[in-house]
Length: 109
Image 1 (cartoon, rainbow, N blue to C red):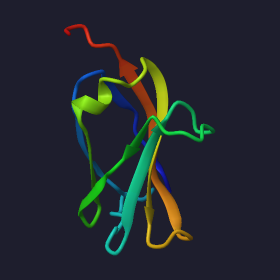
Image 2: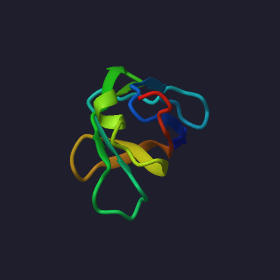
Image 3: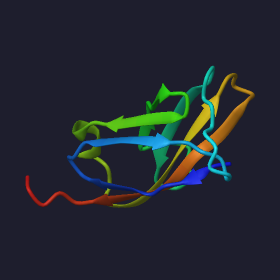
Image 4: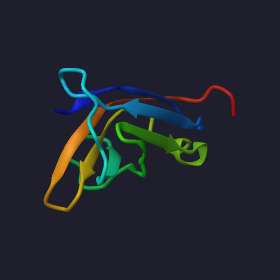
């Protein structure tokens, strides 16, 4: 059920994106009663996250993600991975979106 969306991040720039979640048939995924969380890691098998994400649900099928420039400035240049999961309990977790994070250097300092 997870959708894939790659993020392009420039060090020192803000990331502000809203995802509209739908199933494979294009029907909205209802997030009513759910919580969301996520992380960026260098690779999925890493135990430590580069960033713990704090996405928020803004409508029944929309997730908003905001990463401040003070966080992106310290991300390593390269390709990382991320995912966002929905859950009601710690035993009811489902990945709803994932992808690569393409981290670009900042030209202007």
